[in-house]
Amino acid sequence: MANLETHDEGDARILAISGEVDMDSSPDVKDGILGALKGASTLKVLLKDVSYIDSSGIAVLIQGMKDANRANVAYSLLDPSPNVKSVIELAMLQQVFTIEESGG
Image 1 (cartoon, helix red, strand yellow):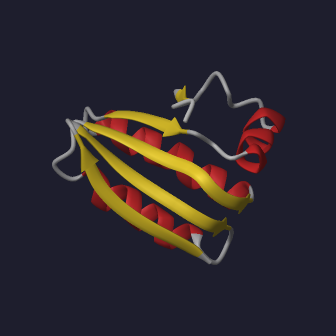
Image 2 (cartoon, helix red, strand yellow):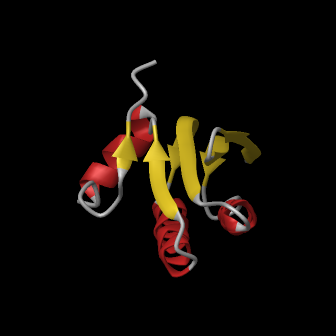
């Protein structure tokens, strides 16, 4: 089960995802990303509180990036949790995504 919250910080929209992103919750995450893209110039997907992500979750993040590119919205992954980071690295996608670390 994933929880999603959206808020604006300056000119960036932040979509904070927490919990598990798996086959069951991926459709909700996809809808959340699409909704957050509307009217945004920058979308940062905050992943620091994601405890688990599977391949369907990674696929949704990739689709979100493609949708953002089509909408001309800057898209990045913000503070991926160690679990998310390891799956991204295992799939060798760290060069595909723009990954930001807030350091805080």
